[in-house]
Amino acid sequence: MKHLRGIPELGVEGIVRILNLADHMVEVNRRPVPKVPALVGRTVVSLFFEDSTRTRISFETAAKRLSADIMTFSVSTSSVNKGESLRDTIETVSAMGVAAFIVRHKTSGVPWQVSQWTDASIINAGDGWHQHPTQALLDCHTIRTELGRPATEDCLAGLRIAIVGDVRHSRVARSDIQAFTALGARVVVVAPRTLLPPEVHTWPVEVTSDLDSVVADVDVVYMLRMQRERMSEALVPDLGEYSNRFGLDHARAARLRDECLVMHPGPMNRGVEMLVDPADLRRSVVTRQVSNGVAVRMAVLFDVLGDTNPEVAS
Ligand code: NCD
Image (cartoon, rainbow, N blue to C red; front, side, top):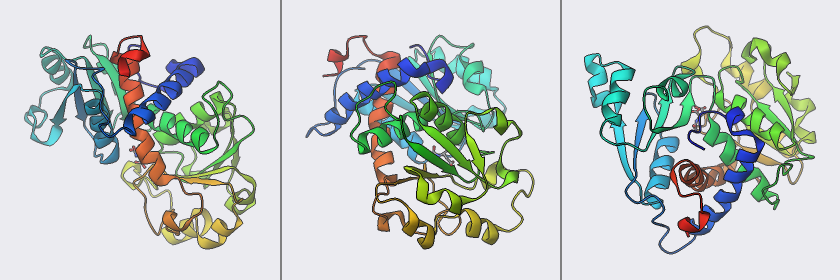
């Protein structure tokens, strides 16, 4: 695979391939020295035009564990501030001999555009409201490993997953829905009508605005962050009312099935969508999502840049 820009171009075989590689990377990460020489001599540049904590650090940790050289392009101190265009920035940095760019941008479609300006591989770390493929892959990996299922094309079959909150502005929701349904899960989207995209009826999901009617009947509750920075209009007039109807509070948490997983991509708005501390929940896997993120991003970097023989990552 040359690029990882979105879940649809990866396809179900691609998802399964990454999940299998991720198992191998989890094993590498458990070693006393969690590092392999798989990408020695390859240079990876992380280009984040939007704020990020966990995704950037996670990719950088992943690249280092595979022995790649990772350069961080910090937009706030770069020539972008002198008016350099995205295209000039990409062409300049690629002329230095870069094997892959990890790109996050507030505009949907940027990773596809950028891949026309360079021979390097492009890994999408989030574009606008559109795609966040590595988040979806780490979420699939987390769910199936928590349930002890091997990485197969139907490894999420039989599961009903609720995705709750600001679906309209969420690239995580879009990528997760594609990946979860590709692996056989059923998805129910729970949101106020104003936080649903107009095209939701074309998605392979059930839709409801009644969280109480689904909490006791799902295998995973995936809470989304209220994306206030991506909203241009006041879609939720009253945040308190939003929390009452769509927040995970103690009463709803008490109604979850014993084995129901609770997930959140982070960063969390405590007191808005999360009214309970995930640490108090029996089956919260929020921290596990973060640690799995490193292994899954190692798998993606290896798939995009590594030798086709996985033994090289041994
Ligand atoms: C997400 C993102 O940036 O899309 N965060 C993340 O990558 N962990 C979700 C969010 O911002 O709510």
